[in-house]
Length: 461
Image (cartoon, rainbow, N blue to C red; front, side, top):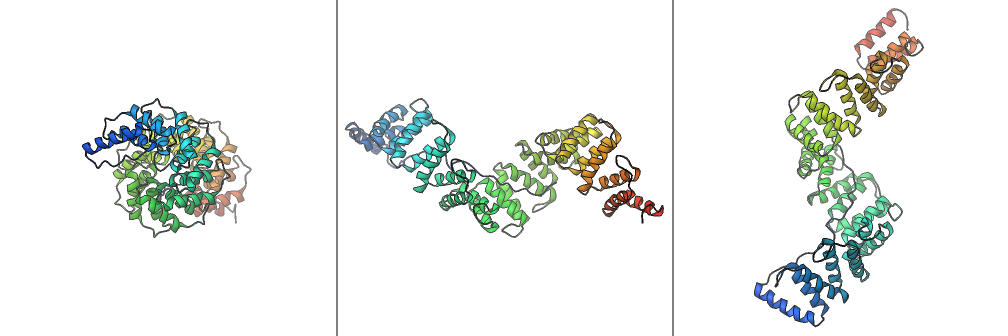
């Protein structure tokens, strides 16, 4: 089982949905609202733009009159045609949602532009998003930057955040981590949780700001206190690793749980690890398996692997090699070397799957090519024995070398044997002794015995 992992990923997107209005607070009674409606209707029919806008809003929300999207659109259009920016924005929303009109993103962009050209910050932000995503307009990073910048300069926190992401990724602008951090800070100072999280990442990674775990922890905490699961997960990892805070497994478990309860797969995996190891919580293999499963069901490869281990060992679940193989395969298909190796072992031994040396070799090779020492050793063994691959001592030695160079004691011993007997390499007692020594120093009994025999026979001094 591996230690807690630290998720480090930028969150791209607005902190709130675009094109969303808050409904006016309805405090007046129905009679008062009906009178207000009649007053607005009269003024609207005289051509008063603000009255036309308010009348459209009343139809939109059904205040003082029966809710009617078609009437809302009609009156909002009259106000919008007179240049009322609020009406233009509402009308864009109607086209975005297909309320009272057919959904039409080109019309959304057109009405947003009218409001944006008059300096409306929320319209500028949303128009930037249209260009960012290519909705209703051709995707254009430079235009997205331009409109986000206009809104950001007026203090729009969502625009400031998105502008930070664009500078971080270098889309439509030269990549600039310092600018990214600066815009994240502006949005973070206004309470934008995503910006607080990303500013924390900037401090954690030392990108755009001097690396500072204390600052990273502080910004993660602000976002975590607003309920952002990724920030809660990262805060848990900082407590687990003692970065920017005193190491505290109990606090780590508490923050992982907050994120895990929101469905964060990384936190679910990490919480499972804490239960498996009894860190910050009482050791509980059933709880470990349960949290691994939640993360595994979301496609987390490490969790799939650990759930496979739980089934193989019968820890927290009934021992079931077929289930172990199934979960190893899911992780192995995602390229996880540990899972590829373990799946190879199951094929080699015929546990949970039909014994198949060819499949064992295939999975060992996938893991070995990623540098897994045990897989490299076992692949060497298959070549030594000629199991599903042509018998080839030179190939066996090559794979033993790879594993032995990583400190695998079995591989070091077998490499010593190869040099001693001259199999796959020229016979060389000095090399044999050197590899036996490396394995013996790790406690390998066979290597220790081989060294004694060599010394007794005078083959080495």
